Length: 143
Image 1 (cartoon, rainbow, N blue to C red):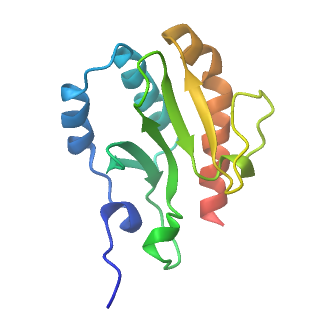
Image 2 (cartoon, rainbow, N blue to C red; image 1 turned 180 degrees about the horizontal axis):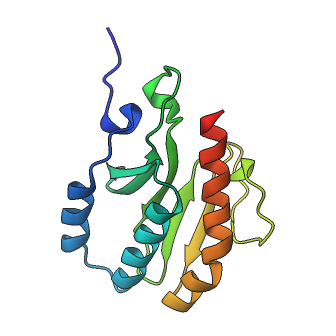
């Protein structure tokens, strides 16, 4: 039986679903969420968004060779809302990026890295490095 493809695996953006999710989101750092969302989408026109793993997730929308859906090869970064004192984001391939600004955290065996935003000032202070990492991850997908 063929694996079910999702808009994430197909690279089809669903901004209306993210808008609806954010309108209902009850989080003390909601303004940081909105800011980071726009920061990510403004980084590259080939970045799309949808709701996966119960949160806004950002992915590559360009052409790619076929792959198994469970490999999540399009995935760039997604929000994690399990804490109220910060916004955490997971980058499945974050360890493959050059993190010259040392903004990524975690030492996972599967190439994941996290970035944490504790306030609007914190998000703005990490903006340049975070955008650079996103650009690197998009470039890797284009190859």
